[in-house]
Length: 81
Figure 1 (spheres, rainbow, N blue to C red):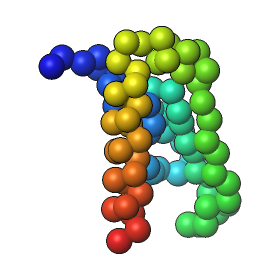
Figure 2 (figure 1 turned 90 degrees about the horizontal axis):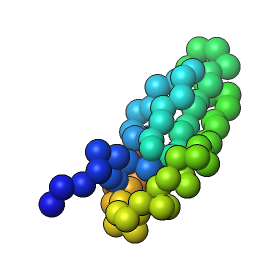
Figure 3 (figure 1 turned 135 degrees about the vertical axis):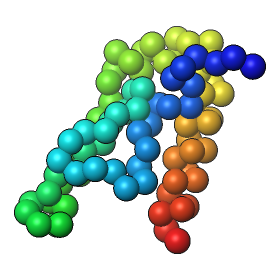
């Protein structure tokens, strides 16, 4: 099966995200800001509503969303161990 290039990439990869710069998925982004040294001071999540609107209009949205959520759950599980 051939999918859109963005298929399954709604969210950024959250394993070892860099600090002090945003990392983006197709519609969502996160940014971790340091307060100095290694301490994380703020965490910010955001959504690009224009991209989200494009995503929900896509014919592959339902399965793309499921794959994106599965990848996010897998990353969360790996980070806990």
